[in-house]
Length: 359
Image (cartoon, rainbow, N blue to C red; front, side, top):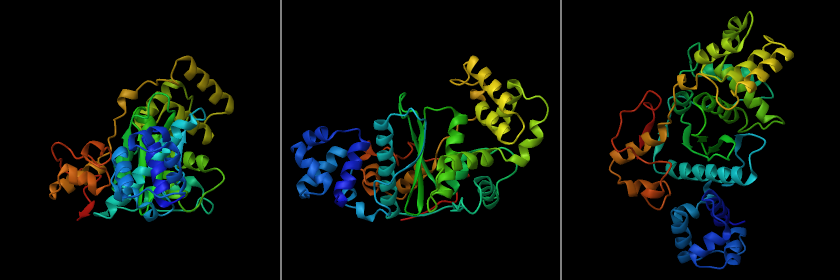
């Protein structure tokens, strides 16, 4: 597959288009588009412009697939349920890869420096729980619950973009590296506690699996997320005595983690037996809590701000919204759904205050 073919197919999938859809919009035969995607033929300059217009990107972005380390169509780390439809998660994976490409394009326009770094650690040399503790220590995180997982990740330069994946998605989040910058695509339709767990899970992938894939990467990320959000040495004293669902609701309010996740955490730490875990999950199902847990409205909603802060800074530096869109590889402002500026530029939050942007 040629460089443009790889980007072309990824951009088409990200937009939810078939080859026939895009071929009709560009005014060519589907067979011609198929050859372009397979690298059997190259579109000329006029065709590249038409393709870019149809996909809402710039011709320059379509032609720069060779600049992406690891290739544009890299497999994403994905937190999805087993029943997720292949067609849906493949489209989401394509959207993540386009986000990587737009982020890589942005990095050529501005210099991004973060307050802290995302370490890459080998899960074969250390277990995921130990690695989670090392990240908390390196980031100098305080004891107790993580006030905002989003803010801590963004302070390390991780770009988080969220949108509604749709009711049938059954995918919570995806992540990958875009050169030296990590990106996460997050499902905005999930509950606040589930978003926090998904972000911690994806952070685990970014820390452990960028250079060191393992046979059980999902298990690694789950273990990392549990320790990152609910450190064992801090919760053990809270897991004494009889652990009822009422007690787990109290723990949810404190830790900002779902009741189901806390039951699993208690079991993994030996605070409840297999039989007690089974009984608790039967009670959770009987009360309808697998779909909607109590106390969800008591968990603060976290909003990603880094992408918007970058956009605001570029607009404040003199770019129009259209010029900003083109700078990050979109054809115009209406297609710029990743780096759209605020109507009114806000003051940087703690999470992004130390991000340096140099044109």
